[in-house]
Image (cartoon, rainbow, N blue to C red):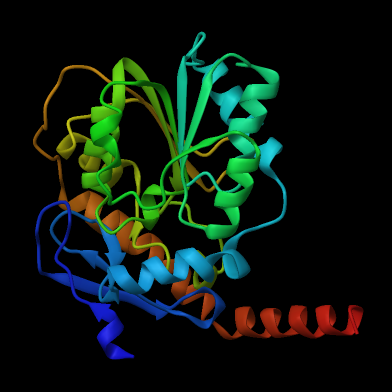
Length: 300
């Protein structure tokens, strides 16, 4: 229904001048993807309402987007990246995973690295919440938008946000909350899909649940507006070439001015337009149809 959708301005610069990129998303859901012509932020506009997203995450998300196990492999990648950059936390007391799923990352850290730490999670899925409780992980909140941070000011040594920042209605508000609950010199780990090197096809990269599509420039601007600054940004590695990873160490700095350039806007726009042009070419269409036929023949 149209009433499920809302229109928004650019979260970074407030701009209203947007260029449409695509309307097709994964699993047949609409994904109205636009780019801000002023700062280059890519986001959904219009997008679902907060209430529609809440219902989807509570009861529908798992069947479309929750993958197989993969939990230990994922957190192993986090650990190895942090060690390689000399950011691996030493004896953290409290660890928070935002968008934890069933808590595989926290369970791995408890079993292999920090048996004495306390573990906390924010997770909307009702199914995942039950598993978290069974594994002794404290559920801080089911929704990031709630006032959960009031009871955890400057308590966490390590916060994990793996492939969740792109899901929020207001990532800057979320980052401000995270800053408030991090101890000084506490570590925030962020991983999101890299809009400058997206996975293919774009109809799978664009998703109704991904309200924002960050690159190294736009995620840096979001962090600046939240009073945070990246210590390291990785644009893909041998673990995942389509991932954008940020290590953020909290300090006393406040919100900073954003940095934008027309070249950055054009670069991001051309990445998507060039890929869409290639994917919509006749050879690409034929190739996809042949792959589908072979898959159906193999699995019949």
